[in-house]
Length: 406
Image (tube, rainbow, N blue to C red; front, side):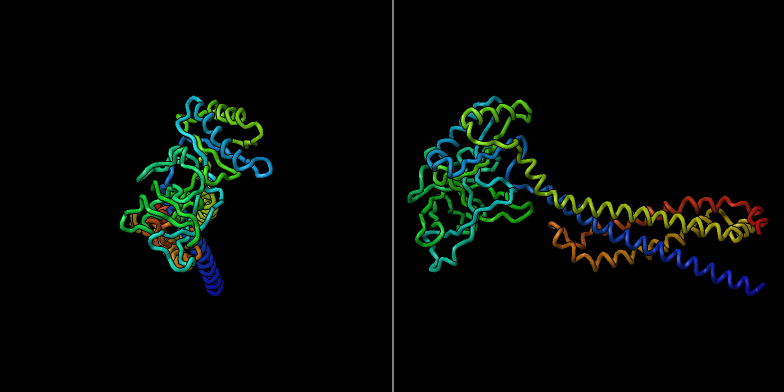
């Protein structure tokens, strides 16, 4: 009989250790997933709060395709200005302009430039820049702030010596750290390139990849370079289906041969730009939520089973005058120890694996303090709540019934 009891005790102890180990593993996995999710959410919040340099609110966009096979350069110059004039006449329209680079479309135009009065001896030392083709009215329509000088005018002409251009703040500060960029002369492409005069400086704009550092940019007018595909940007007083319809109608009346796809907005472009990071956070969040649920079910199950195995012990404690509160603390302490061990293991796992998240984070360190405080606190609090119900039942054990069952 003593051998049988001993064997049962060993089996019971082995089973408890196995169940406890499984719960610790579930908590550790949940902890690692929750920390990863927390970091991605913090990263997404910071990315969403970044000022892209333009105001996407109350804008309507439309792509105007004018291929070389159908339209000459002169026809494109005239047609874009006619469309802009017609759209500006639509009731509710506050401003209209166009750009060759639809923000966050994945398109980018690149070249090199230098100050004429600080000409590098080698073209390879020219400053790499992005450049954009825009029309007069673009900066106001897109909500890009003019810092110095003036915007483009309709008479800013063709490509000639002293061609008027507008530059970004990043370019002005890079080539003119003393702050005298306005009126300065740039060289386009290489030492033999055309000369361009800076007539305005605008705020930096993120239009290629959300969260990326804005590159130095040169803006050239559509009169200089009549691009074949331009994105019309219209700022309206308020977004409505009627105004969108009126804008589309105005375009069709002026240019019936120009195919206009569905109208969009800069707000939609911005949402698309941050969508991959939102998706990453959502997917990891789903796995983290599932892991947390499994961990809490495990804590609840192990605590409930442990209470059922210790009914006689609990009954004796209560029969000898033990306080229900001490029983509650005893049971919760065991569950809390499992949660602490699991949380520590999960934190170590997240710490080691954090380097794989670095490429997905925006201005967020893998050691972000708020995340590392909030997640363990949440996990431990949830584990205590999961263990509380079976622990509470343990305090209500009737000593007579517990001892009679034996």
